[in-house]
Image (cartoon, rainbow, N blue to C red; front, side, top):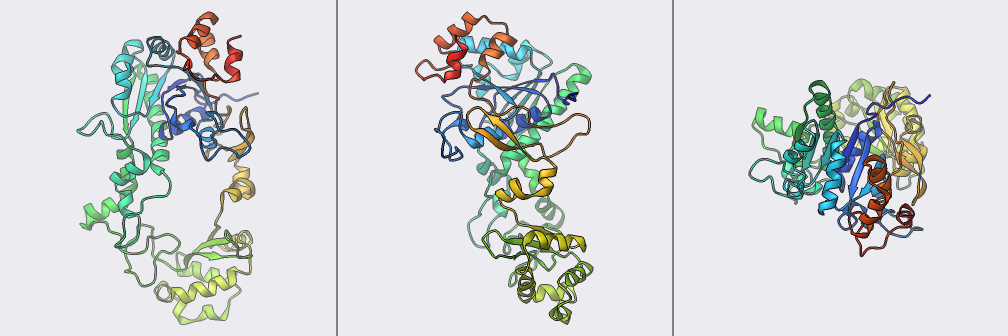
Length: 441
């Protein structure tokens, strides 16, 4: 017997695009909500030709790998909401839905006639989540943003980089993923409030402001200690402290050694393992794992201060040992002895070789009508009674238009055909996909 999902019978109208908004609705879908994605092929930036399209496939609106990962668990309604008929249809859809999510700048949906005040006239209990870059209030609410731009004004770009060099920023747009998780949390909070009181509300989430808490330790350093943040040394990463640089608070916990990525057998591009010893006791355990080599008994390595002062020599000795083992065997030996060590994993390692991720069913295969059978990342959490998992592949653009327009909203088949003919459901000058022609038969 199939177990019910937590958000069974909750319907979300999804006006979001690119990454942050779709990332929020992706997880609401994994929790069981019905996500109806409103799309228009002329401006659906997330579907545009992508380097993530498999090489053996035609590049079109349905074959972006990135889009198809970000938009699982959704249905697609192709609709021109900037036409009178399209606006009427989407309002009818909102009237039978629970949540609306959008991630445009503050003026866009209001200009379309779909602002919160207008939707309250249609359904007072609607939970309306806005995920704009700067929010819907304040002097700069109309500013537009993008993940890397938001991280710059939030302070993260300033902290990333080398001393006396331009700020480097982060390699991935974490603001989109972080904003997406906040968006899902806000939607659930609004839904709970609605269920308790019967009242809807407008939830105004700013992507930029939501990223500010990621600077937490730097903020405390300024407000409590009066120290402004600076890039005072090599950024903490593999090493807790880099030789020849000031010993500064790097917000990563204790400044210790060993604390590095060490090359492993057979010494290829991705053959590395990270080892960290947070105390002298953990260091002694690592020494035992390495077979009590004579060099480790030197007084230079007996304390954290000594190991930091002689870190280059220490790392050379450890790597001479680590190169004798594969990264997974080295991990097993260290973990068995209570030493923090884990392999450096590539995308292939994570998807194909990691036994823990396989056990947790993090990457499960799904059949997609355009991409075929491929693995998609699943929910990274487990619910004991209400499963959270992918249950729909990402939709083809407009794939569910007939199902929603006729089946849910009660329009006739002739009205569907007329909507395709007059440009309500698809641009009249743009070729339709074969599955759309099948809808019209």
